[in-house]
Image (cartoon, rainbow, N blue to C red):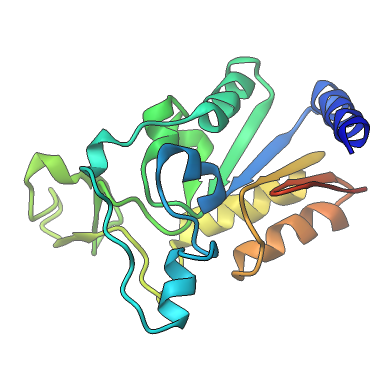
Length: 205
């Protein structure tokens, strides 16, 4: 088992070295080491919701949650010039907090630290205390509720980069929520290599 894992790590290392358009896709699993619950873990948000239970409360302030080694590894790929785009379904702000450039990031489910203008889609920090955008539009939560449409610009850029990618790396996602779950398939159809890191490594190419 150890030898198999080492072999897979070596393969992924070679793929990263060869890649010219790397796209990374993350969900809740990447943030569990930061103390945040996984959506589909035994006591995760979705699991509790299916049981009719309320989500567990975080026992510390949200702004005290820090990026972990998984987030920082993606930042290193950015520093190396490898990362071309990061797609995340997380709302925890940890990718931006870790140092990911905003123009390389699509937050498909929004960001709990930001408000969005209902008129022009401009985003501002909640901490600013603003209730109205400069365009006079109302500022509302940027977090996407169940059943709401995903932000159009982020969704479009995510699919565009998925099709451009030569390596699509999934971290901490069970790939069950569409349309985001379709993005790795788009990458595969366009000729990219696909690596999925969850409890195990999976490779498709």
